Image (cartoon, rainbow, N blue to C red; front, side, top):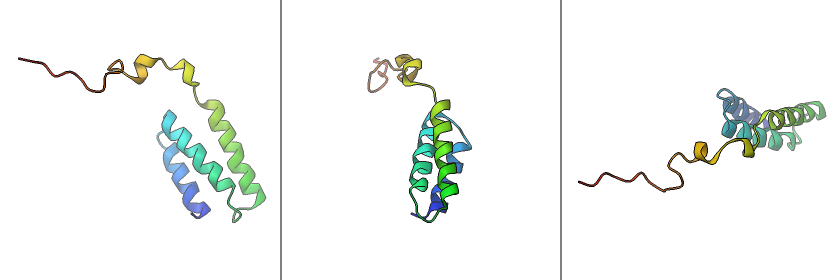
Length: 82
Protein backbone atom coordinates (compact mmCIF):
# COMPACT_ATOMS: atom_id res chain seq x y z
CA UNK A 1 0.00 0.00 0.00
CA UNK A 2 1.41 3.44 -0.86
CA UNK A 3 2.65 5.53 2.03
CA UNK A 4 0.29 8.37 1.16
CA UNK A 5 -2.72 6.09 1.57
CA UNK A 6 -1.49 5.00 4.98
CA UNK A 7 -0.93 8.58 6.08
CA UNK A 8 -4.35 9.73 4.88
CA UNK A 9 -5.99 6.80 6.67
CA UNK A 10 -4.12 7.69 9.88
CA UNK A 11 -5.32 11.29 9.61
CA UNK A 12 -8.90 10.14 9.19
CA UNK A 13 -8.61 7.99 12.32
CA UNK A 14 -7.35 10.97 14.31
CA UNK A 15 -10.33 13.14 13.35
CA UNK A 16 -12.27 11.29 16.05
CA UNK A 17 -9.57 10.43 18.60
CA UNK A 18 -10.97 7.56 20.65
CA UNK A 19 -8.73 4.78 21.94
CA UNK A 20 -9.47 2.45 19.03
CA UNK A 21 -8.79 5.16 16.44
CA UNK A 22 -5.53 6.16 18.14
CA UNK A 23 -4.33 2.56 18.10
CA UNK A 24 -5.32 2.18 14.45
CA UNK A 25 -3.59 5.44 13.53
CA UNK A 26 -0.50 4.31 15.40
CA UNK A 27 -0.42 1.04 13.43
CA UNK A 28 -0.91 2.88 10.13
CA UNK A 29 1.85 5.37 10.93
CA UNK A 30 4.16 2.55 11.97
CA UNK A 31 3.51 0.80 8.68
CA UNK A 32 4.06 4.03 6.74
CA UNK A 33 7.40 4.51 8.52
CA UNK A 34 8.55 1.18 7.08
CA UNK A 35 7.83 2.35 3.53
CA UNK A 36 11.03 3.10 1.61
CA UNK A 37 9.23 5.69 -0.55
CA UNK A 38 9.36 8.11 2.39
CA UNK A 39 12.47 10.10 3.15
CA UNK A 40 14.33 9.34 6.39
CA UNK A 41 12.97 12.56 7.90
CA UNK A 42 9.39 11.58 6.99
CA UNK A 43 9.87 8.11 8.48
CA UNK A 44 11.26 9.63 11.66
CA UNK A 45 8.27 12.01 11.86
CA UNK A 46 5.90 9.03 11.59
CA UNK A 47 7.71 7.23 14.40
CA UNK A 48 7.64 10.33 16.60
CA UNK A 49 3.87 10.54 16.09
CA UNK A 50 3.54 6.86 16.99
CA UNK A 51 5.44 7.48 20.24
CA UNK A 52 3.22 10.45 21.08
CA UNK A 53 0.03 8.48 20.37
CA UNK A 54 1.21 5.63 22.58
CA UNK A 55 2.10 8.02 25.42
CA UNK A 56 -1.29 9.75 25.21
CA UNK A 57 -3.28 6.52 25.16
CA UNK A 58 -4.88 5.54 28.49
CA UNK A 59 -3.60 2.32 29.91
CA UNK A 60 -5.85 -0.72 29.79
CA UNK A 61 -5.87 -0.95 33.58
CA UNK A 62 -7.50 2.45 34.03
CA UNK A 63 -10.64 1.44 32.16
CA UNK A 64 -12.88 -0.67 34.33
CA UNK A 65 -14.43 -3.89 33.09
CA UNK A 66 -17.92 -2.47 33.63
CA UNK A 67 -17.19 0.35 31.22
CA UNK A 68 -15.90 -2.08 28.62
CA UNK A 69 -18.83 -4.45 29.07
CA UNK A 70 -21.95 -2.72 30.28
CA UNK A 71 -23.84 -6.03 30.01
CA UNK A 72 -21.47 -7.58 32.61
CA UNK A 73 -20.09 -10.19 30.23
CA UNK A 74 -23.44 -11.51 29.04
CA UNK A 75 -23.47 -11.98 25.27
CA UNK A 76 -26.91 -10.41 24.77
CA UNK A 77 -29.44 -8.46 26.75
CA UNK A 78 -32.05 -10.81 28.17
CA UNK A 79 -35.40 -10.25 26.56
CA UNK A 80 -38.38 -9.76 28.83
CA UNK A 81 -40.54 -12.85 29.14
CA UNK A 82 -44.27 -12.41 29.30
